[in-house]
Length: 300
Image (cartoon, rainbow, N blue to C red; front, side, top):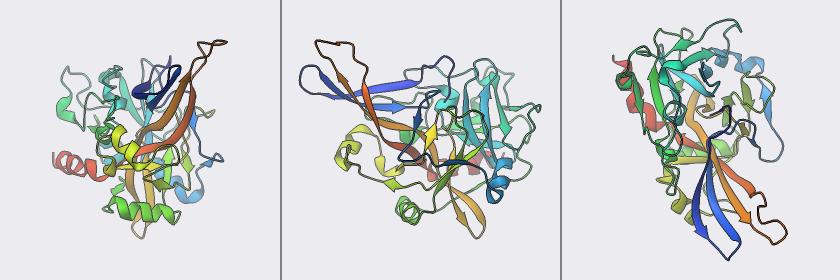
């Protein structure tokens, strides 16, 4: 999520090595200016084939802080996003829910966003389902629970909502290997808040700097997390990972944060040397996590 001023870079110590060298797992939930780009930056403006998605994907933002995330339509009056976009984390407070509004990418610049249902009341929990309200950011990192489905005060998704894929993670990785997985999101490091397409998005379970055993130590239920290389920036938390099907685009995952390996190296010359960080992968939760909540809230 994008914060002003930035305070959402969340670090978690994994293990200490020799004196002067600290290696840690970092879970970043969208710093405002940093981007996690793998190779060339493949984020591009929406082409004609994607423009219909701007009526189903948009921005969830706080009128008080300017913080924003991406969210997408899961029903006529339902949106899905990352839970930290609503509640913050165990280490960092979230926004005031009554200050949050959702605005579609297709909306006019002058158009106001739609607030969450119950935003004028003190108790909004009946209008939000989430995997957690206190995202665990110390290993094992609880990214698998970083999802939320929220009801809007009025139906804003009049053009319809995105279908949720029934593919399992193995099938999703196969689609990614064929170059079929892409992301639609807003990005704080770019000069505007227009939706961008990111593709291709590779998905892996092991990386040169973090093998499967390391990932299993750092994350809860890593088998339900899609470790991907869609290029992201701050504000892309909550954005959908998609595949195209004969029935139209379907969501396979929700982007939630970046998995980073950070080395703090102190030397006699510069004991306060800035950490050297490397993005291992971005993380998305398997969309099956929200299917039950969407179905239940859709019945009311």
